[in-house]
Amino acid sequence: MARSEKWLLGVLGLLLVATSAYAWHLGDLRANTIAFEWVFFGAFTLYGLASFWVLSKGQVGYSVIIGIFALSIAAQGILVFTRPTLSDDMFRYVWDGRVQAHDISPYLYPPSAPQLSFLRDSTIYPSINRNLVVTVYPPAAEATYAILWRIWPDNIHWFQGAMAAGGLIAGILLVGLLRDLGRPTVRVLIYLWSPLLTFETAHSAHIDGLMLPLLVGAWWARVRERDGWAGFLLGVATAMKFYPALLLPFIWRPRDPRGRWSMPLAFGAAIGLFYLPYWFTSGASVLGYLPDYFQEKFNISPLVAALTHVLGGFKLYTINGLTLVELGALFVAVGWAVLNPASDAETALRRCIWPISIITLLSQNLFSWYMLWLLPLLAIFVQPSNIKVGWLRLPRLDAWTGWWLFCGLIGFSYTFFIEWTPVSAAIQAQFFPLYGFLLISFVISLWKKFASYTNQHSIPQRLN
Image 1 (cartoon, rainbow, N blue to C red):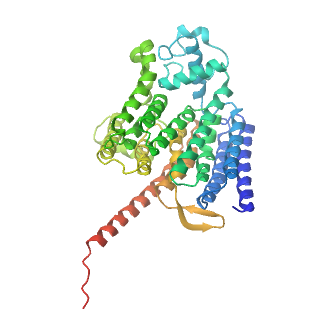
Image 2: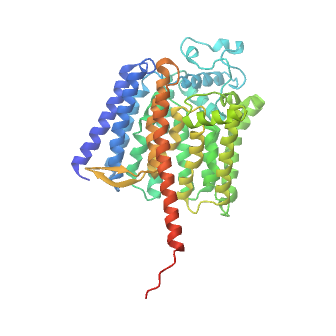
Image 3: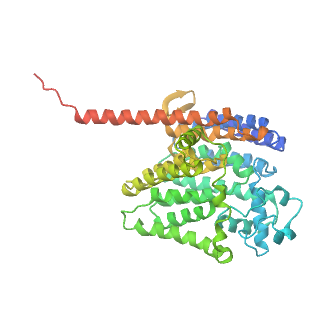
């Protein structure tokens, strides 16, 4: 690789680090939402240029990979020392860790309960959201909070650093996964330099940061046909964040004697490993606030709004009706995947976009960090087009590019905090480009199938 290209990549990375420094300068990002939006989309523009550079590259030297990681660490390291303001979820993590350190189950009492009054302070407790209800987080997440709190009690930057480290470890695993799939390892940049990853782990400290290495590890184990490990890691990820369970049918190998039972059994064992201890102390309360959480609404897409209107016309209770639509779509996708198992590991990983798409497109409560599980797949499957501009190669006009763009445009969801109300134009800016890419990809796919069918069934003309 030419020295000038290395300099170009280095400059883009340093500018990304500068966006983190400016975000640190802003302080409260909710109070400065508009300024933060400029920072986020400035970072996404730089990241986009770097991603387009990556699409033009094959294998590169280790020094480039190390540089990509170093610049990501620098950008995230700055944000680790900011106070989380885009989300207050992390304060609940610290609180739940404190509660467990006093041998009390976090599923038994809400923070406002009189039984926990002796644990309240002036730093963590006032920042907790939903302090009138018990925790929503699954047992593996709660076990993590308990461990982190015991190592460094009540230190919010320690929790931020742990979540950021999880995202970076996932990047290391992704390098191995890319190599085994025959992809250039430099593609890890598409994951590591995403401002979505940087702000949602290092700043907001979402538990998804520690779920990511489990998820990437499960995908890598599937590629290496280590079905037991794939099932176990996916089970731990599910016990930490619930939704990775949807991926099991898509990476399962039901027709392979080695993977038929080992993957689902290991998955179930991992779930039991974390749920049983909390079940013994909390009983059915181990589900926490989760059933009520599914009733909440945020960042509702135009598609969901349209379905709500249609279901309302049929006199269906909107939330239950939409849930049935979502579950029905998942049931069809899962059924098809089980009856038609992927022929190889790459196809299995590619199919993971199906449940992710269904959940995202039909969600009534879509926060930006919910898209973190898609970033590793984008690093694998975003493909270059034939259009090259200097050192950059534009991505292909397909669904994967649409999802890549969506993982940047979802930053518009934070406009909610400007006046604490949904901004219709911001929601449309997020979703309409994605709808367009999905429609174009669908039309191209249909055309290719039609052309293939026509070629196979055409009658050759006789030569006179």
